[in-house]
Length: 98
Image 1 (tube, rainbow, N blue to C red):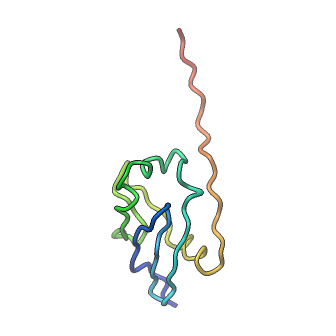
Image 2: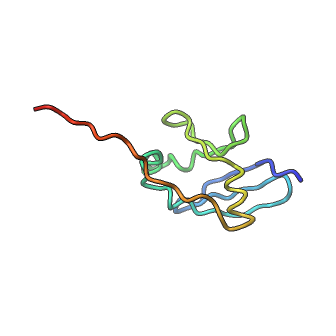
Image 3: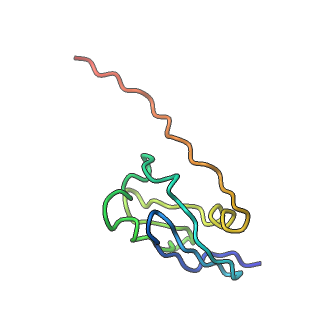
């Protein structure tokens, strides 16, 4: 089975259309990720639409340190309707002396 990601294109409302080497194709909804700190760049008009397949085969945006998503997780979403839910970042709280 060849589940290599061949093609990705942005669709409205943070959806992606994906095509894999085994013939699997479809649309995934990434709205659960939108608004999370790592994905805030998507809020800038035109950024989400610049998605592409990276040289390594991941779903990628050349922004803020090359944001990438695992193509295997997205494949699971298409074929089994499941992927791990995003977790909010747990950053240490900074204390500022005044």
